[in-house]
Length: 582
Image (cartoon, rainbow, N blue to C red; front, side, top):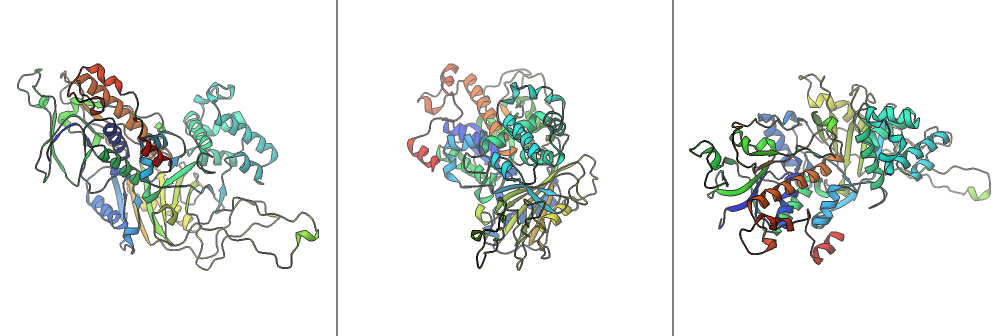
């Protein structure tokens, strides 16, 4: 390597680290980005099926406390390279920090996206109910009485606005979301379930009302920006592919990437100075890699808490977590399942089938066409409220994210089911992830269309539930592949070994991302974390007099010059802008 000296070294290519790397590189700083894995994405990586099998096998043998109860089916299907599977699945709200970063950075042009087709709530009777999230949905639904429609519309109008200044918001900070819906808006239990678990993506009815209201507002305001759905699904596995896009943007602006190399040591002069309290001549970190000839140096290191060496804890600056995260879930683990099937899940039709109102001739034809059965879901979410599945959790909601061929993550005729369940602290240690998630897997498989099935039953005119779908009669399929594991929050950072040092804190520890966060929260939390890392790094560079190459040719200037960096993302060139719009 011609020059192994950098302004910042970033360890790990997770989504937050990748966004920060792109922002720093685009702002003119010299960045080295390192990952011991041979792929991008870190804990949010999108990998092929054979890579997933290898990852599961390595985690099962590893002592890594991040993942436990790891198992998979012994047989791996064919066409393994045609799958792109995300270790920490998520969906993207159409408004918010991650969308802003994708557009403002120009990274959106490096990837593809599709709308999430549907969000539904599983009912204990074995059917999926569509979620009324817009005026049109509310007015079309025949399951909701006129009085409840008015109450629901009042709530949706309230939540979509600046509700913090409304009288209905008073006392919300002292109630759970379910209590708030019942007390303030007199909404019934079935509507509460749709709002709590499918619009707010809460995993418990006892979640505080305020964060749930904020997520509901995001849901409502996201509708219509790119289409009728409020959410997008990234192609080729989602978060991992987006991470790679930001890494590409960093590389285009001079970022240096080193993958598949284990870090052997990180040192700083403050740990080797001979005089207590003395100032070392250099303030740069030195980092060595396995089977890599050069020693890398930098003024700043950025990583998660899991990569912070204990001997450097006195130099660490731990950044606070983003407000967008669900703090209620920050300390919880989550059981995850990745299941590949060859039959798609059937959702109810969004529109109510027409009924015959009179006996006039125009309502009859010689050969009436039967209604077409719904097509299998290509991208959607099924929410399983607490107690909705026999043998499932009594106090937590599970989600199943379905992705198919249209998301560019599976071959034709195959689907991936991502099952997630935040774990109660009362779960026995001997219970495996597979045992925990099996009730939800069985329920999801029962919703699939059989190879000879004509599809779910279309409700008749006298049906009391025209917006629901009965289970197909065909026998549920057997999964082609399964993988199960429990993901735990990041370990607590090590305590400082020397609290008497006066050294500036130049080892930046990014905020942790809660694995049990709702599906739409992780991308926004990562983008918010990355921005916090960016501004802290710029502040350190300003204090040290390190100048961005975008501001001129001088190597070192007074600290005030760094104030010229006044935005997270610099203005894009005309070509970048047109590419992002496409």
